[in-house]
Image (tube, rainbow over all chains, first blue to last red; front, side, top):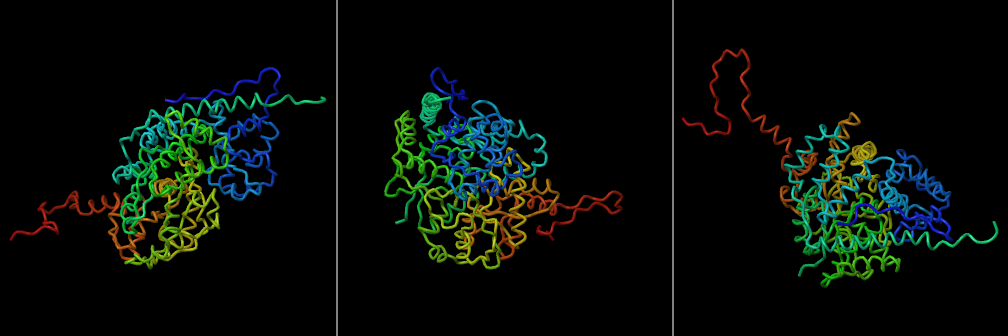
Length: 213
Length: 338
């Protein structure tokens, strides 16, 4: 089983300057996100289907990241409201991988255990835990665990449809365990090590801001 | 000889997306397409793993790509019927092609189980793309024996097939007409559905119901406005959201919508003259019966309709104060002994 939580990267040590918040976020994104090229046009927020429920529009989040306003960004619900529909991404004139930035912010928040609400991270964690346990998702367990924990009040209204799902054979009650589960977890453990190393390197590689002060 | 593809069914195929599974199994042999399931595939991480650890999620998907590279036998195409699986598989492949550094990292992780992946060695494609590009609309239409004329369908492609479009395969990422054309080839009446690539809410129904239900409502209201009998989808997650959560949405907004959502393969099967039961009809929560009645096809009853029918068939209870003797009357369908 992979280590449950990834500890936050260590604080920078002597001779090195602290990485900017934007550098930290970018280090969290697997591919080139082009985040630093944002021109603040606002096309993202204007395209977003769930912007109305966000504390900040994506454009504002990118400005806050650039300004190093770590607390505001980390306490914002914006990444958690992203539905990953990629409408902003295909419209962005700078071709920024916006959903990837949102994923990175979510991952940063869960890893540092600093989240505005626990409903979404808990859902992700429960989902991911089943992958670690079986190698596949387990819908029945996921729904049962999540709803009992966070959506008790929604359950009565769902009984009829829920029973329907069972009688129509749309609920698999036995999880499927993949044969290569041990190997999968070895892969994920190694990836965790690599991710932590990459995050640490963000601190180590930044040269002191040189020159006159 | 059937054209063979590698197949990544995804976790919902055995559960919530069972109707998709049934109809794919029925329809693909008709088109002479063979699917070889990827051996021992693992979950793609859906929209959840990226939010826990983006890099680890690349390794998670990398394992599937590595398996596909090893298994490829005459074909390098890996077909995913689920839009979320499709985009996850395509993303990792696109990113390792783009970044040698990421490719090295993913391969380092895969090495922990003696696996590796050569960037670009597997082509990830959605089932809809196979229908449109490989089989072709002409061939799709050639098998039609029962055109769906009179059935008004809203082609709801969802967001993740034409977006983010890592390989520039789609001319229109916001208003693609691929699904429209496919349904037209089946003889159906296709309505002009402007919300064709809007979001179904994704996992919002689990983490922020008000957000998710609002998105579902927009899809349904627009479909009703243009007079659709049903929505047609290419993704089990979209199907689940619009179907299962429609009642909660109705309750939340104090409205009464009844918009069934069907998989495109189910409609292909119908047009090919296959019985509705074998295509997974009747598994939906919001019944497709009223929709199919428009073209005179009887779909299996959903659970509630079944219950209502059973209740109607039961002899009525004797009323309080009924002076007549309770003599059992023969049921209509019983043969009366004389």
